[in-house]
Length: 257
Image (cartoon, rainbow, N blue to C red):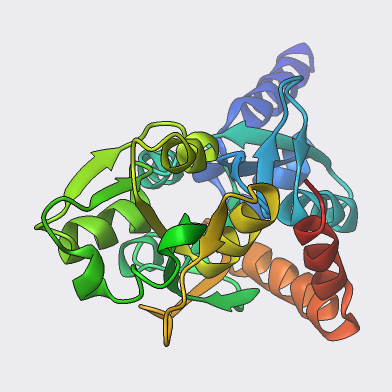
């Protein structure tokens, strides 16, 4: 009887120690009582990490709602755009939230929710240059100084489309606009919603007068593969989208400094 009791205790301890990859993602979330959300904390209005370590942004609010819906504790796992795919593959978080773009490489590793926002690449520059950098060809010129944050879609787009320009990779995404304001760079090409927010925060900078967005992209939440977890997230998000709660949350984040 004593051996049987110790066997049960051992099994219970092993169950607590098992990572999510040992079973389903949903089982691991409920077993630990924790939802792990990977986020970069550098992409307003979706996610931003304050100096005190707290987070704010539209997708931060959504992460809080999702954890409440699942009845578990929320833990934010810091990541970076340049290492997000590796962190996802290493199972460091259950879901990535914070303006994550649907990309083929990401879709090959995990599942995406329905799109939360449809956007595209466009430039932001000093307001005096708003009518100058309106096409890819106008930016892809010798002497044009393009600044970009490292990793993911912005750097990939810049390297593919601006081979003749002078490209600088600036490690800190939130201070990329400062490089243009200080005159160390001329233009930054990023997602349209970030361009609008940059222009809201920095009166010296303006979205350029492009006739059309350079690309089309979709934002969504990137989930570890597990049908039960994916269905739970999809059902919750569908309610947020249909009720208008997500739209209201995004509008509030856009208006926030």
